[in-house]
Image (cartoon, rainbow over all chains, first blue to last red; front, top):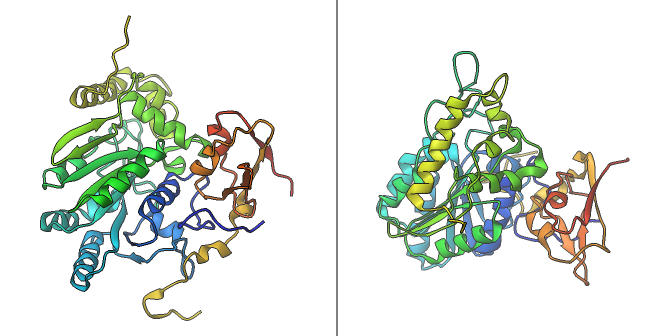
Amino acid sequence: MTGESCGLFEYGHRACGGCAAAMAARTILDAAGKDTIIVSATGCMEVFSTPYPETAWKVPWIHSLFENNSAVASGIVASLKKQGRKEKVIALGGDGATFDIGILCLSGAFERGHDFVYICYDNEAYMNTGIQRSGATPYDASTTTSPAGKCSTGNRRPKKDLPMILAAHGAPYVATASVAYLPDLKKKVEKAIATEGPCYLQVHAPCCTGWGFEGEKTMTIGKLAIETGLWVNYEMEDGKVTRVKKVVRKPVEVYLKEQRRFRHLFKPKLNETEIAKIQAVADRNAERFGIDIKLKK
Amino acid sequence: MALGLGCSAKPGKAKENRTGSWRTFRPEFLHEKCTKCGLCSLVCPEGCIAEDGEGQPVPDYDYCKGCGICAEECPGQAIEMKKEEK
């Protein structure tokens, strides 16, 4: 059967089975609608959705480089403004393009205050080129450039707090979301588009290939990240945290042990010292955002 | 294949690429258990689950990669993954 597809992101794209970035792309377009121009940095989403001469996008879409995603978006916004046109501009990038390579242009665009939305789908490493660590890779995750072994327990640095960096630019709306909660993601995209000025959205996108879990578990892993406090879904308006998803927290082990990138913390023997450090990250998140639901005893 | 100016492609041309051939496991939809909540259609990374006139999910097996997210997330266990036989 070859019927009509369900949205503006056409099927036939080459994402892995169970890809969270594909899910995010569908939801983002669903929220944004057809009068949208997408600027896409190099990355998994760009590669799997547009192998020339094919494209999965049914809206105007332009491929920038890794580093100048926000600059290209800024140019489009300026041109539309001059022409008096009302199309919305969304810049999409992975965590590598956003946290590392494109941060200079991203910072510039937010400083100039263009009216656009930057959405980072955060799969916590350079997945398209073969799972190299990025500024978004969490502490102790094993990647091909931070491999766990006799002398290492994986990535030595904590995840960079990019939403706070962009909030510090004076962005009117900064939020985090997860593919595990798609209706919430959709609402946040709509809100970001409706807000004037540069808005930033960071979407947690578990990667079955890079993190090492079965494709059908994508949503489950995303939920576990939130339930353990290692990922926090929140909204910031004018620099203040206004909404936070609260949870009854689970220990971080339940999230870590499901993934190959943290396998070295459990085999050949349980590394309690390192797991305690990751638990401390979750505890800090919980305290900072107040995510804990207190159960009545 | 000549590269055009700016390498433009027609909207949604990816549809020519039938990813259904990737599949190892095939989702079977048990209509009698389905509550028509539409969650499978929402979570499908391909976006290839449509709804028929009565709200029952209709997967497009030409594109379904068999990832199994629909079966995993279905609240009524109304989707079963069966090994593909070609």
